Length: 108
Image (cartoon, rainbow, N blue to C red; front, side, top):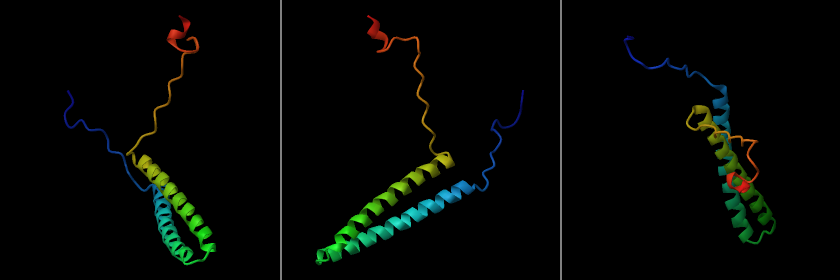
């Protein structure tokens, strides 16, 4: 009988350049989102003062802020996948080609 602990070998968690790149991307998207939100607030205040061109800048800044937030959340999901916090979805099972179309009760 074997003696000692039953733990597996430790995995070496060294430097991962992909993780650094994703972290820089998340930080960049967060900073860009903050700047665009600040710009949208500024354009909104000048648009209410009567500057009609600021409404267009307000809209573009708002759309850009939404895009930066979306990209940042996607990158956070990728970071969690690289760290092993989440897993890829299970592949869908392949249907049996011998079954009739419509399912089990369609042949009755």
